[in-house]
Length: 399
Image (spheres, helix red, strand yellow):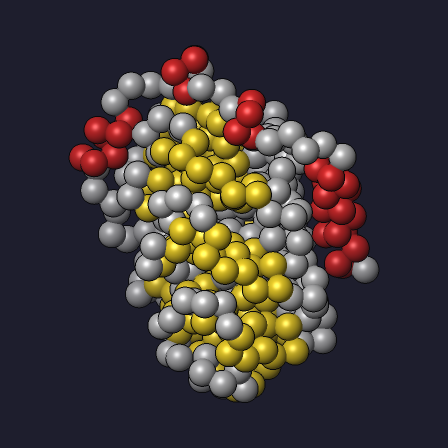
């Protein structure tokens, strides 16, 4: 029954998009005409260095490794703080320069002090925020269900620009590199926008809506679509390089590692394909849809499935290393820090799992499903829940 909750709104959105072929490029607001556009953004982007102790975007980096070299949480945790957002939380947090940024179902992007959970500001929009923000050089980039993509000042919460898309609502979590931001949307398009002005550089149309977040590597953008394909696009032009067809919609966000692209599909398989030509290298079958996105560390792929298991697979052969039952469908994407994997489950728990054995080290129970992907920064794990709260947990003094 859990997967039904996910698919009903998504299928309605697909149907809505299918009834209207309008595209965002035709109706995009020109940034120069938008009242929230502020001059000098590009100059500021080149002047502000990135924060070194951070979790800046969904899956941590452009390749979507899901792995950080920060300090983890090896022993049983305790609650550091909890913030009531007033709405379901499916967006995954970004944590940069002592501030946590996360979207909520109360139609706003929140900024909280990461050490205390103190409210700093919120940026209201006209739709739900399901996707995760990316925070690069003092600017927060995110999309909302109001058919707009936003750039907001990370310190003040002031709007810098917004871009109007075609109908369909939901958007994927963005990837930001150089002077471009890339994301997919339910209007079926992949977009590349100039981060300084919000102007469209290119768009690529797929056969259905997009929730998969793009990975960027070696001048290519890799992204899945609900049309069942994984696409590789030229990073500068948006031209299709290749596509790989699965047997069902691709919600999972790809990860790139040493010349291979890894991702899951609703056909129940985890795939590895060649990053240069899209040729299949291996596939591994789980027992249900794979909405979760992979993490890659120590030549092993880690991913969840709606069958209630987290899997560890050999990245070269796709053979199983271990699998661990986490009590419910896994829509959260795992992250890796040191020797532990952190992942949420639909059984209302966040789990820490030992990488080498698959044994559960500890679990932390909350009041609702944990579909967000955690962010780990300097010994603190941040995540959201369907109970409407954002959590920060840290090591308990009692081991």
